[in-house]
Image 1 (tube, rainbow, N blue to C red):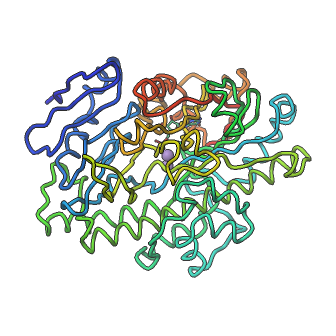
Image 2: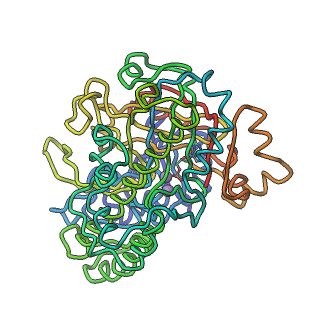
Image 3: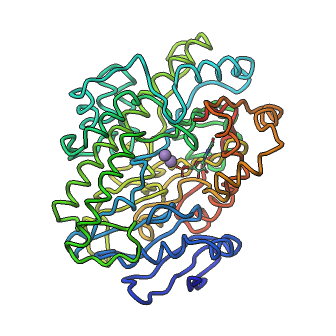
Length: 481
Ligand code: 5GP
Ligand code: MN
Ligand code: MN
């Protein structure tokens, strides 16, 4: 049955409340996107989320929405613990704290071009990638791994991977509080042990980029971005450890939903009240996995800096590879929001959605207070990615959230079919983009055509006012999983 949807304005659509829905759905999209979405199940998932107990405000979908496990990817939903609100692993996703970070540099593209091949090869060597990728040189004991789960990016910096000032520029300063490694299964710990400091497969990447267009000079200057500058983006999450934490929680959550009498229109929405032992335990294990992901991105950052230093023969003071920001896009977090004039502590689920806090918010880093929190929106390996900042409108309308990427339009299978007969690496190389991948099939699954044009996606969030475009980045070299 097609989902009933009403247009509000050029970039907003309402799914009216009906049946078991406790609130309405709000979808950010243009007409063309809605037409595609109506043939898929993602809108039904927005509607399903609206039936969950304790949901506050609306069940929200960003323009990069597509089908996900239970909750759509590109979804935002906030829950009130005092009103029976729930936490759901499907609202976070399997890759707990998958996220993106962006490093700046003092390098101009002309300085890097002649060494690009060497740089791509060295990055590919120094940062393990691929589905089962692991490091041989970083063996953690279980005790040490548990410290990673407690401390996140702090653990990495404390052990010499990166700089103290990096922590100022990570969402939550790189550590979610209240992580309980004891609640993470042996199997999850086992899977994570030698995967710390690895990219993983498929959609994850490490990309050397050039700033090709500045949209907002003032904000770009505050972020330290300029046209022609070389930047590096890192997209990865919590690897096998996070996957296992999510997987372990599903059975418990199915039992909990039955125990607390929560009606589930789809079993994949399984959840538990935020105040229940099951809900608290999931959040504490999830925080451990999230911290693992923060540490993972921090370690990779360290090796990226080292690699640039080696290949370009320059020191840190010349390269100035500062961390602009690190955002999570698969997470559930406690945050203060104002609802109908009242301040409330809510659990905000962002699954394939990015926090986009406004200027002057205390959680926006001091350096960026005047412009808002940086928001990193990757596009695809053949076109471009964007840097945005958060807005007051996002804070009011979407719990301070915006989109997280372009969003898939082709399944992996369909993408592979479309790539047949093409040598994607050669075609990209002809356009000045070097690709290094652990697996050739991945490259086919990740062709540009597999994703929406991220320009269309960010234009919608900008038009809706839930993000402000600062700069556009073009890929130079992409390390793929
Ligand atoms: P997800 O976390 O949902 O898998 O991916 C986030 C977004 O990253 C995708 O929606 C897509 O737009 C973008 N993306 C995937 N692969 C690449 C890549 O190789 N380079 C860039 N710049 N973006 C990518
Ligand atoms: Mn991701
Ligand atoms: Mn991921």
